[in-house]
Image (cartoon, rainbow, N blue to C red; front, side, top):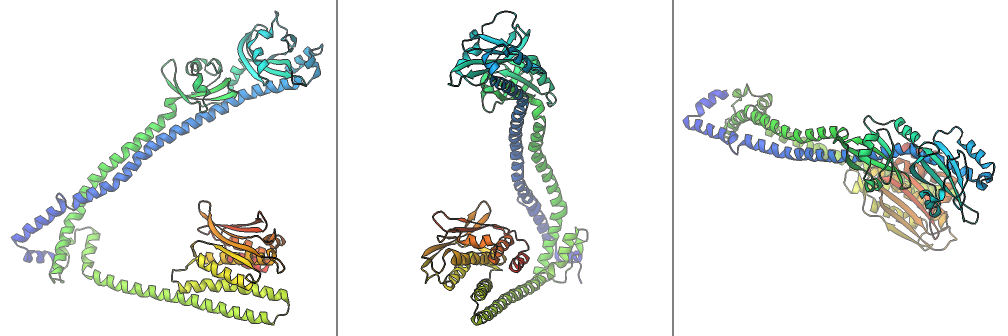
Length: 601
């Protein structure tokens, strides 16, 4: 037996050595295996690199959207405390407005207003103003005479009958800044009857801003539509970033970018507190919000570049050292086998990777082994297919025998109810036999077309129920739909039960003509809906369902078997609609157990 080295020495001369160099150049040089392999890998990595770049840009977009959503949510959350203050003031005034003493502004009015202020730190004063602008009573009397009719909020109250906020203004009575809550009053005939006003302490609003639980570095502020900051946890920054941009603050989204006095960029969002007059703004430093986003995007953009460079170096080196040199030797070995030198053995591959050694050792017998393996596999597949077809054929024959026995038993029964039960069982067994017959006749690995299956079963049931003699029309709207036989059986049985209820309850023997529809249509994103509709008596199919008979329990069990849900409702214009919605993949449960339990219940 010749070794690989001795065969090479005796076979190759100078011309053979030149040929060897040409082979190596063809594999490793331009256009060779190494370069082509590298180009293919680079081409394969380009979609990954492009996807990574797109992912980075998409991450940037999503992070920006998340930041905007977070800012908006934080603004609305921060506004809730201020809204509660204004709502509390409004409810206090509405409560007082229902008291006759306050409405009249008589002697007991001031006492009642003083009582309402007790224990309230937010509310500094309450007053009752008549329809002509005269101050009727007030909890804390002013130091000097005032004329409410000359105030801006009074003019607004004359035209707007809803609760409103005005200010801030400096109260000479309380010696501090306040917001004025104004509640216009109306007489029973709808005429203007003056106002109730409450003074809201701005200092306490400022205290509320400081007490809010905020992220580190966040700024929250209450300001009016003119951009005047009323209260904030950081008044210096708030006046710089919230003032002077009323249009942005009034927009539905409310997110803007602003620069503080020190040049720092802030991202902010706003939320209305009461109508469109006052707002709460929430701001965070832009760098703090997006710093991790920028890092992630940079990594996403640089990672594919680094991956391509490293992959190129690794592939070029590995191809030359681990593949090219051994491929040259295997090519020579193949040439020897092609020349009829089958005694040659790959001794020169002793230092090659295990895969190349194994390839060299099995190259001679590979074709024969593959040919033998294919023959064995084909025989096994043919035998399996033959056995499966034989099983379905025998099942079909056995079911036909069962039907014959049921027919024989039915012919001997005199009890109409018992005969009807036997006939119903025959219909169900016939449906099972029909499924197995279709599987036997159409070799599709247990897959059947639901359209011809339902058509044949429904037509048989229509004839056996006397549908033609009773002038009942049958309409099928079922598209071709391939389905596993294990799912087809419960769907067919469900259709039989629904139709049996229609013939029994919707169109009794003494009823007139009518129409029955059987439909199959898509339902939702990944579901189908099987419907049985009739225009007979209202609540036709529902009678059996409501009585919880065998048919109803069987229908519920069949629906559970295919992972679906069944429903029955009255049809507009008369009749009933019975539906079974089920997923296309048929998330089946232990359907056989459910069906047996329903039948035995």
